[in-house]
Amino acid sequence: MQVEARRGGSGELVIAVSDTGIGIPEDSLERVFAPFERAGDPAMRSVEGTGLGLSITRGLVELHGGAISLASKLGRGTIVTIVIPATRVNAANFPARVA
Image (cartoon, one colour):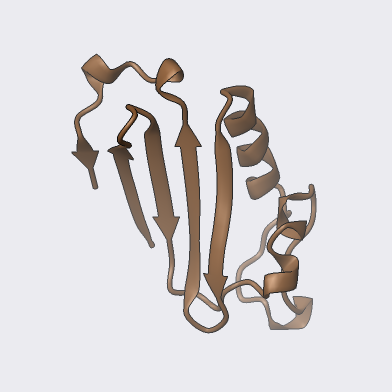
């Protein structure tokens, strides 16, 4: 897993979390944001979870006026990108790039 945080061109906070896991099927990309939803075949999962992580994250991001998106390729991994508006970021305490 890799986590990157940076300031965008307008001062917004951009956080990207990527992995090289099994990926999420395209038809499940929006569904995984619903509480207790998980993508893929339950019999094939190697990681346990409740299916709440993305739902909670989306709620917190949206409370700050931000957005969250997923990009995924089966067999290659997933990237979750969060954007928090500049009005919610204290730029004085946030360097241009943190990785």
